[in-house]
Length: 177
Image 1 (spheres, one colour):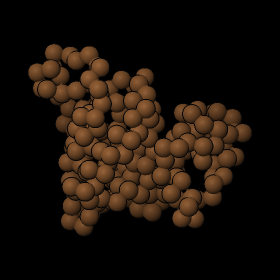
Image 2 (cartoon, one colour):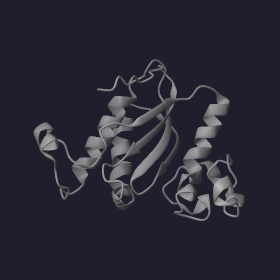
Image 3 (tube, helix red, strand yellow):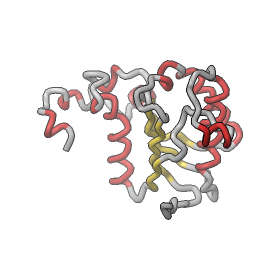
């Protein structure tokens, strides 16, 4: 059994990757309203600031800043995952383990988390979040992906709408570096 330890920094800023169990699914973008509702429920119960968020068909990346003195991001993810699952029709097949634990087969059990260390780390992770739809070949320009807080940041003047447009013409090897 792995001995994975999460970093808990009260009031910290963290980068997350959360995946669906079926990595070929389009469930997140097909049910984006359910996901937005689930996030709203979590934010009302346990507030947090969304620094950046992108939702792809089968996974999502986001950066949150928790309130001063609070380090419980796991409780927030639990609320989001449960609330989302309750809104989705039961069409997935369940393993005996999931049946025994009364779990849906929507989400991978764990999520990846990285505590942001400094401004440089923050900027690198914001850029990673926003470039992700382009990296996965879902769009030719970052601004064309609708399920991203990039649009909010463009409205607030933090990014130009054509940000990262030059990456499309870059050879794939350089783009992935």
